[in-house]
Length: 557
Image 1: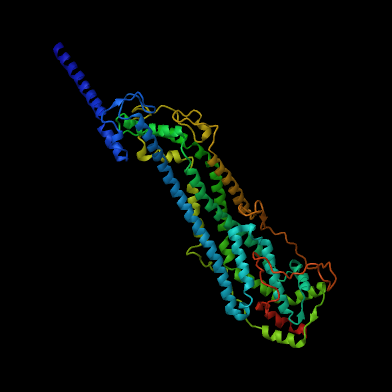
Image 2: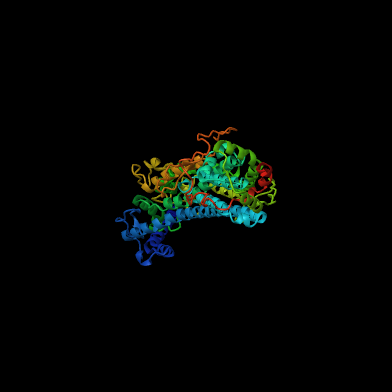
């Protein structure tokens, strides 16, 4: 019996010796390690043929090893590339997605502006022919200014002033036309234009259109600016260089198992999380302001779908302007009487001239009806509702992008579940606590040395940029335009119309000057290129109010 026991014991010992020798032999020849490193693009000549004493190693365990100090340095460079790869891929996908959304929105808004201009032009040409064509510059400049405001904001075009100039110029042309028998001096027309709001010759259309245009344009251009900012922020934040301590920790996590001959061993999930949260601590600090920014973008997107809908304002703008002109036609006698009472009665033209002018300008055209139930014509092959619906999904998905990067990276085939994983020193359970996100939570990170007193300057600057953009988005949500074209001198902090209605309404006109008194300022200069009224005074009067001539004929006689 004792003999059998001794035989069994000797057999067990012999088996253990053989297994140990096999494992040692496997480590000593480093064949699997050489093959694994070759598959990763490393030079096989950098890997020893046999295991060596790992005492000189600076990062990996110092037993028998298939790595040298020189190989450790190369593995550090390799690990820096590998740790950037998943972050870069995720960031590039997000960057590309919002770059495409920005291009789609920008193209849509620009085409919508062009379509609105073409629609007005086609309708007026079809109705009034050459008589409109000869005066079309007023409307071309109007749309040119709207486009310029969309592109550059209040730094380039003061929307309130531009709209006031447009209605003033339109009033002057129409006033001359409905009172074609009179000669009007520039000083007289200045008197008229100073009281446009009190006269309200176009009814309530200018006030309503100003509010609608201001809100829609501010919302549209601010939203597009927000979309254009996102790829830039993502690019700058995702390309921040890893710290030396992060590179060492990453190399230890990814390649020290190779050095010990365990090429198939992957890191424990919690170990990976601590390494990545240490490496991406600064990026995670962006998350709070990033989420605030995305929330403001989502709120403004809802405005674009509702009361600040750019499409619903621009598509029927030709009809709205025509309604204003028809208001002037219908009220031309009352408007003229108020002007004559306040500014004085102008001199009559010679009878032959006025009669000929009346004959030349009479027309019988009417404006086409507009159905509010009709859906707006789409631009860029889509609609605003569709665009905003798609981008809202992307904005929601992008929330917490930076704080969840470690979880996204430390998943799938990159880690090993359970206890059969690399914990930084051996194949065993990872015992350390998992750190939270952000720089402040890394003070006790067991795997990455993080200096919490030195936040990354690039990321801090992007946090400030996001914070400022969020304030612009919130202002646009209320209909306020805060100029953000900081490259344009004098544009910083400038505000343009809020969209609120503060216009007083009264039936009485107050004229501080006596009749026929020449005013100190005479509008004889050409308007600035940015305004809608960049048309010289004295050009042929717009014929759109010709119907008013028939109404005024009894008054003339």
